Length: 509
Image (cartoon, rainbow, N blue to C red; front, side, top):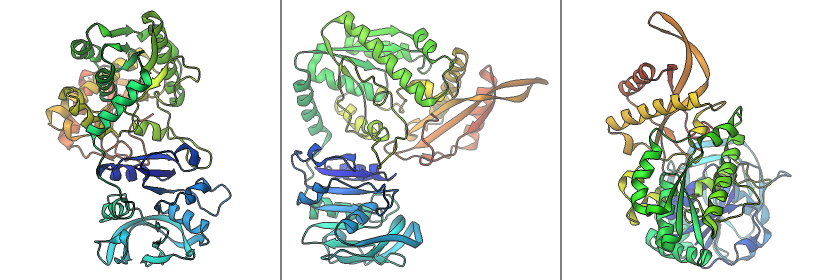
C-alpha cells in the first residue's frame, strides 16, 4: 500500500483517488500522525507528503513524525511536502516574490524514474507562495519553470523525490503518469487491489470484529447505508438487524420506498421507527449548522440504543461512513481544520454503548457504487444520487419547522422529476433544492406575497471532494422554477447556485 500524509491541501484526496484508480491500495492520514500508528502496515511501499496551506519556516508549521525519514522506503513530497523534505535535509525555503497559481510550463529531465516517458516540457499545475532557494546535499534538480528553478528534485540513492507542482489534479496534463512512475517504477507496487479483493478482506475483518454478536444497522435507504447493510448481510447473515428511523427529514415518499425495497431483502429484520416528533422537538429553534448535525447524530444513537435494548444481544452498530466523511471531519492541531462534522463521524457521543462497524470507511463514493453492483444491489438503489446523512436538515437553512420541511420536500421532488424527465439524473452527481431562511416580496394574481425562496443546486463530482456546478439548460431551469412557484404553496422565488467546491461545499450546511 501507499501511505499519504495530509498537511491540509485541498487536493490531497485527489492523490488517493489517482492511486486507487491504478488498483493500488492507499490510505490517508493526518500529516503529524505518530509513526507507531502505521509502521505495522503490511506491504507499505511508499509515502507521499501532501501539499498544505502553511509555510515550513513558520512557528506553527506542521511536520511529520521524525521517524518517517528513517523507514527507508520511497518518499514523494508534493508542494508543501517537497518543502518539508528540503528544510529537513538541509535545504532552504523562503517566500517567493512571484507566486504561482495555475498552469505553468515546466522543463523536466526525463532521464529519471519520476519523469520516465514524459516530454522535455510539460504543462503542470502550480499552487504555491513559497519556493526553494537551496536544495539539500545529495539532491539534483530534475525540473524547473520560469518562476521555480527547483520545480522538482530527487535523491535517487535514498529514493526521495519532491515536486513543487500538483500532479494529482486533472489540469496537470501528464500528472497521472508522474504518480504512476512513483508508485510502480520507484515504489514497486503491484496492481493487486480490486473491489472483489476488498469484499473478501472486509468480510473476513467484519466476521473477526463481530464474532457471534448481532449488529444493528442504521439504514437510511441511501447508497452508503444500503451497500453497508448488504455487505454485512453477506458477512453475518440474519444476525444483522436493520433499523430505519423515520425522522421526517427524508425526501418525499422515502419511508414507503424503504419499506417496499428493503422489506423484501431483510424481511422481519427491518424495523421502521417513527421518530418525527422527537427530532423536530430537539431541533426546535436551532439554527447553527454544526449544532444541528450534532443533535441529529446524538438522537440517532439514542434511538438505536433503545432499539438494541429491546432486541437484546446487540453489541455493534453498523454505519455507512465513507472516506470523504472521515476526511472532511479531520481536525489535528497545526495541520487541518474540519470543514464540517458528519453525523456518522463527529456527531457520535463519546460514551456510546455500541461499538461501530464501518465496512465502507476507506472507500470513496464511486467505489461504493462499484461495490454495490458487485454485491448485486438493484440499480434503483446504486444509481441514486447521494443524500446527506442529516437529511433535509442541512438543506433547511435556519430553524427547522414542519412547514418549511413540507415546502422543501415538494420543491425537491419537482427538481428530481424534471431532472429525470430531461434524462440528466444519471449524468449529474447531485441535484436538489434548498429552502432559505428568508422571505421575499412577490406578486401573484395582482396581490402582494411575502414567501420563501428556494435555491436549486446541481453539481458534478468524482468523489464529493471537489465539485463543479452544472450548467443546466435555461429551459429546464425555467420549467423547474415555474413548477415550484406554481405548485408549492409558500414559495414565490427560485434561484440557482453556481458555486464550485471549493470554495463552497456541495450542501449548504
